[in-house]
Length: 90
Image (cartoon, rainbow, N blue to C red):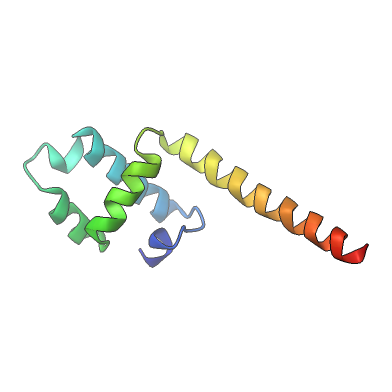
């Protein structure tokens, strides 16, 4: 899950991890069965801090919305690089 902690690249495993976190944040899935957030994080091999940081940023988003946000962030970074390269050429 190291890719998830570093921002990730949108792999299926990462998206599933986000969905798992989303379920836990909503009180669904394993969290309802009495498993603590700490135990879920341990199973997913992430830190508690990573979970709470993710929940703060993506907690209100659905998985498809989070994917779209990441796509837009990548596109924005690409466009910024293009502009910077053009400025250097001038």
